[in-house]
Image 1 (spheres, rainbow, N blue to C red):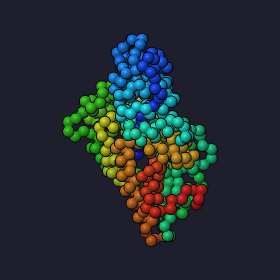
Image 2 (image 1 turned 90 degrees about the horizontal axis):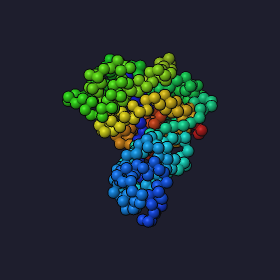
Image 3 (image 1 turned 45 degrees about the vertical axis):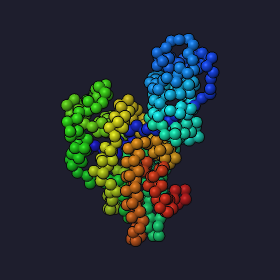
Image 4 (image 1 turned 135 degrees about the horizontal axis):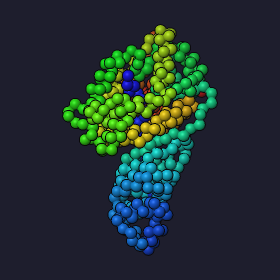
Length: 420
């Protein structure tokens, strides 16, 4: 069975950027404009010039610069490209992104991997935040870098009460391994108090054939469009090569929409690893609930989740597919890092990851959280004096417009474990 929730955690995360630096005089030579020779070379190629003396005003002619994997380490001097509106510097090892802040005409930038160790005071995050405020469309891949957490997993965990009603909220990792366990005793104690378990979808009750048919129907073109005409030839060929591991040939793959191919690639990426849904937090509590004969409530439907996943624009779907292909060998490490963050209970990191979501992905998550919050609020307004234990993806409990944020906005007191 295809696990649609994997898609959320394996997609690339997008952001927003712009540019800054100090002024220079027109009498300076190109060597003084750009300290980084690799950057200088790319700029001069764009100008189609090898002149020794290039005037400052000449750089204003450059509106687009594609400089991926060119060995650039320093962007000083980029402020001279005053008309620049598109920049691609993926695949370069650039520590200081602050020069981007001076580019007033920048509208889209591709930065590639940005490593995130949880230090929100690091200069890179200030730059990203300021770029976002300026409305630049930023494409970047947040790569996590965290040490292993010692002791039981803390998770993303909260308590909400109203009168005699109690709701516990636990953020889930949908895929995992044995390292997620044991859980903090507060989590186990809360579950033992529960009269109901609520999850996104009770996967144990799904009709696998019906789910597969639904996904295939929404994941396949119905109007004669073929994938090979939607994406670049090398992207299609790379996807075809990867999906051959699932026994799929060119004729089959050509019928799929980009979002569906991306989801299938997540299956390929993890099929030879120890990471799977059997160790996911959702599955763990669904099994325990069945052992206790607890009622299990689904907050969403398969159809609504598929609609959410497939709602991205074609351009966004293609971007996600391209990222999935270039990062397929990193999927296991990405999930391992995500599990480390979850085990440490670092909710700020999840909030930042959510903030990095842009476009349709963000809108879809906001809409899902609104609907799930309505149902959770319904639990709080019951008068049965019951306790509800709710398990949803961790990103749904972090950041603006999340379930936690919406409950607080509606006047509920949301209590972290330290205050239980």
